[in-house]
Length: 271
Image (cartoon, rainbow, N blue to C red; front, side, top):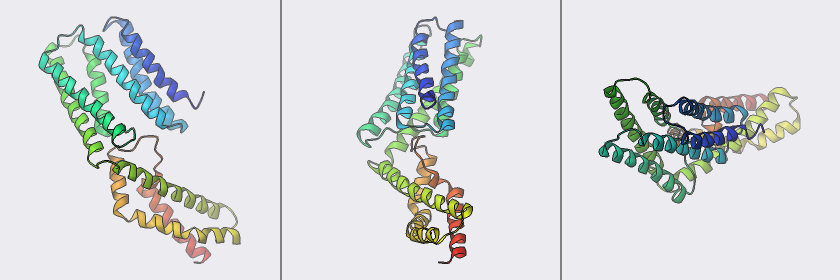
């Protein structure tokens, strides 16, 4: 149950999405379900990170739940709100860009990529609260400005997401993830050896294993000073890696401190 808690919250959002279609828009039950859906969107990611149960399935499931929730609200509101044709076309273009990014990531890059950039997260929060405000007693001119602003932000977020996925070309994200995964194993192993040397008795066996691992440590050091690390770090900042993807090696302070401590221990035990 503990391992599946985040996925249960995500699945609850899908159930909530279907229930939203039953109740009148802007009714008490509609708002209760709408708020509940937003809370599950916040909690499932936080729970997954807190319990360290992030997974590729969870990342995909979360995206499906987000799309389901968004479409349910859209279908509910489009029946009662008069939307100009030009605005409806604009919204459809945004949806098309988003779906194109998903299709390309699956068919061309052969990997599901969900961009979690700051712009995407801000867009999600803004659109959520904008849709919430539509049922409040607010001047229609203000609502119109809020809707236009939401479309502008959503367009920028969709284009940025497509740019992040397309810019590197086929295989670039795959290659980066494979490289980071390989370096992450070295980083973890070196960290384990350092922890052992700092907390246990330094025996001949430990010294032998520590010295034998130094070629790998030098490989990690070369990676840290290379353009590859800078590019991988930039990709991470752009949100091109899934949230569940383990990438502690891209933490600048963490990697620097580990390599620096490695040098200190080598001087202590003798090269």
